[in-house]
Amino acid sequence: MLRVVEHAHRTDTGRQRPANEDSFLARSPLFAVADGMGGAQAGEVASRMAVDVLQEGLGAGNGTVAERLTDQVATANSRIFERSRTDQGNAGMGTTLTAAYVDTEELVVVHVGDSRLYRYRAATLERLTDDHSLVEELVRQGRLTPEEAAEHPQRSIITRALGPESEVAIDSAVMAVEDDDLFLLCSDGLTTMVHDDQIADLLGAGETLAERADALVDAANAAGGRDNITVLLFRVERTGASPAPAAAAGDEPTEPTEAPAATLAGVASTPAQPTAVMPAVTISPNGPETTDDAISGDDVDGTREPRRKKRRGVRAGPFVVLFLVFCLGVGAFFASQTVYFIGNDRGLVTVYRGLPYELPFGVKLYTPNYYSSVPVNTLEEAQRERLLDHRVRSLDDANDLVSKLERGEVVTP
Image (cartoon, rainbow, N blue to C red; front, side, top):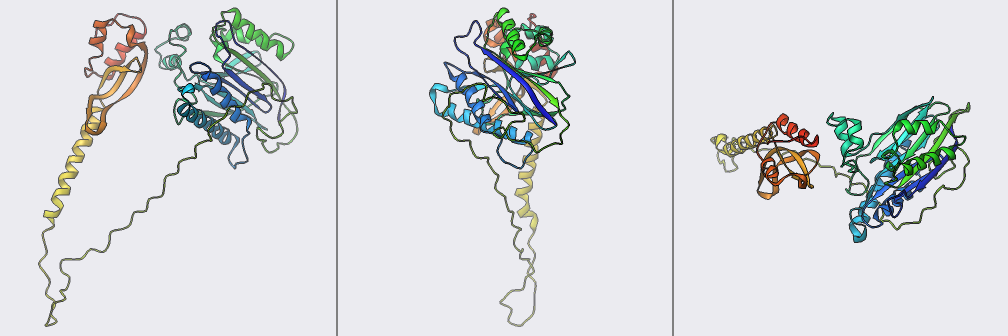
């Protein structure tokens, strides 16, 4: 059976931000870090709302801990999204959220954004989450090296967060845990300032977890402290007790601990939106078809003289034509999905799939295929006109041009 034997935390505004928009939860067995974003204090509101939802507990549902924790994160997203829509001062706000729940036999992790979870085991540091960020996606595609990503001008752009959209994809995982594993939850204010090798060295030093948390924050500030810094450490051990049912976050913790580590001001939240349920659709069978040789009720002599059958081809003709038109339309659409062009979306050079046309009733023959890291306004005017001319290209041609732009090479469209 697992239990948390010690934990420590520290959060700091850093050296360049006027306020701290990070929030965190350190209440065993649940630990979480949220890094808010948005104008004014909107980021702080979003991160606090996310943590507040987790403080409500996992509820008494019948699902697994992973499913219930994921549901809580989805609820947080709905509340933040609704708040941003109804409160003009918080429009566009969002937050990352990375949470870890120490269950009786394993670690349950949910993750959205670029805050991170690390495991320090046998003097080796391992990152357990993938950043949902633009540069991380470029690294995964082989377009940037990790070293280039660390210095990329667009490294702060995240591709997934709680709040901006009504729904969000949530990463979740259940991980095996060994005795004496040490876990680190942190916002990107640490990881953009301190390299993983240095983080590993600092986690291996210090007598207590509190000293190690302080050392990590101090190192981030010494490197420039460009962002808010939040560090949360917890260490687990295995006991010989038989597994007990998993506790909800609002129940008794795995290990008796202090009150919540951070006192978070309550934020009025719009109630979570109910889950949409698709109504069942019942398709009634066609009624009995009257045949053309039915008996006429006007027969006086009792004889059954069948009527002449009508030619059904006349009635089926229009449907055949419509079916053929439909097939041609579908074929044309799928054919359009084999070509690409380059355009502008959200201010970034974007590769689109399809044809650069829009049909009546708002039907578009194209969809964004890849958002580059290159802002359109950084291109020279002549280059911008030639590159974004919506000329149809192959996928290789479009990707090659965008890759060269991202590497800073001279591009001749």
